Image 1 (cartoon, rainbow, N blue to C red):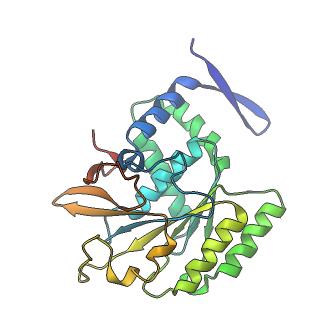
Image 2 (cartoon, rainbow, N blue to C red):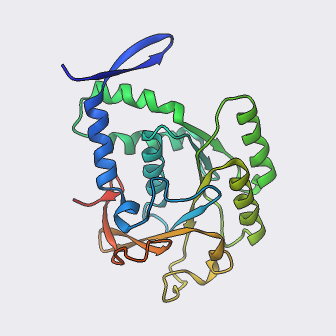
Length: 253
């Protein structure tokens, strides 16, 4: 019989085999798109750092950040997912579906137990786009931390409209990230009618580009989706785009 660990649910201890966990973690590490693009470090971003995934609609920006969030949760580091578009239930479905796709081929009962185990490392928060502000976010985050409910290592903000948000909002978010010792990832919707510069960045993003440590871009070539680094790679890293598997947003084998 293989090694086991245990999780606690409703005051009952449930044994959980290590083997499936190890296999899933190895898969996530070996096929992690940012690691394969040459971004250094387990966290990719430093404390107070900002990162973003840029893409046209429908290419998987949110899915990629959910996959990155799962990777962080596998490391037992808490992730706060802030959605400005969707309800908590819909965001939860994205996590469940992507987790199931990544875990495919392992024992369903054991994977279900591991899913329960990692729930403590995720908190979903929603705002209406028009009602979102840094003071409101900071107030809710402070409440969570002061009540010892949740202290995020990483935050995801999905749905912020960069073409409408000023530089001041992002600067406030960066300062908040420094204050709380976390890093923040964003989705950035780019427009098909707006030709990018030579470095791949849309003109509408240039006024805030300097606030970001890491930028990656998703692009489609026919039915295939590729990821490319735009900013933050180590100098010796490979520069070519890498193909992603759409169901998991991991590197295509």
